[in-house]
Image 1 (cartoon, each protein chain N blue to C red):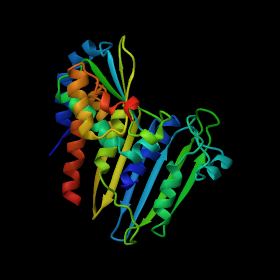
Image 2: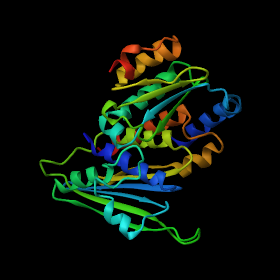
Image 3: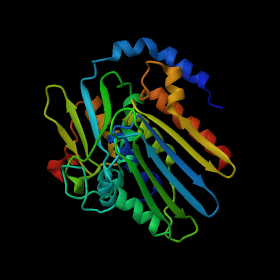
Length: 183
Length: 121
């Protein structure tokens, strides 16, 4: 992947596929490090599955026998001296908490650190593709933050879908404005 | 600054439209957005389609959606155009530029761009 934001788009698709109603994407960035957390309330994975998801020859897709999403993220983190950690709780019944949390740590000063790239495009692409699930995006950087909570948007929009073009454009500008304050 | 009040205005504007729009879209543009597609550049392709379809006034006729791996990873970014009553058209090795062209010539003009389809690659 040319940008970390593309890895984020790819990995978040797993959360949506796991039936998440809310996926939280958090970026904690300092001068030296970037910590990415993708946490969902989806169906979760067994301990055995968690162990195999970073193996390129494990996949849920039916069109091919390889799955490179998490292996790519792992590689991107490890090549900077960082790494990834995955924890997951399988859904036993509707009332017990469940979901998956992927944390990736990057050393920004390392030569092989992949730049974050267009994270705003990743967020708008996620909302455009999955207007019925919620995303909470928080990027903390330089003492400020850029955030988007689709639950807040939904409250205002009521039955107007989140993938309405004007809404997508609004989200794009909303985030770009916030980034102009913290970059 | 962008505010939630602006969102309220969008809502008021869209409210009547939503009812009318339901079920009329007869053309579907589907962009492959699995790992293979994303790595090959599907994100800008998708966003170019969303923008060109909406800016080009085709929103009532065309839906742009995302899907997983279509199974021909070596041809990514892959885009399928499904039109009612017509055979599916599969565009391969797409770029944002090609996407705009497909909207202009194919979706607006009705002419498939054979050069970009899978049978010519």
